[in-house]
Length: 166
Image 1 (cartoon, one colour):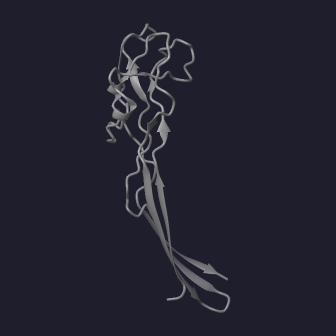
Image 2 (cartoon, helix red, strand yellow):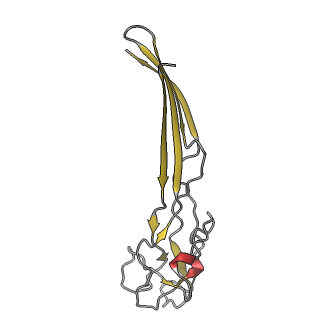
Image 3 (spheres, helix red, strand yellow):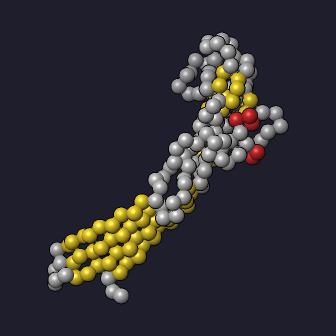
């Protein structure tokens, strides 16, 4: 059984941190490049906002609009996205063809378990209700709030090859 090599890589990661945001500048500080953050809705905590489905990773109704001219109380990177788990395998068989020439058969499989590893959910939790530029006093949950529309890894990939070394 000489010449065989089996390799595995297991990757286990907790989810990436992310910050819930408002879809408009409620603080009125004029900085549109750095979106404002919401408040927590009364009676809600960061621990009970998770719904953990791709359609609604977090509950946008757990967040509330801060008063106009103020900053929201929710901190930066206080929420966590989905975890990431992958298993990669490879099997090699090296055969000596001549004294100086070897042939290696390689079979490699990535994300062997074909696990869906979801990306970061939609960050904008609340969008303004009313005319653009008006003083906003109400907001509704954004359509993309907590929605996961991407994957962080590919589906299962299998490749085979031959490697000739001399």
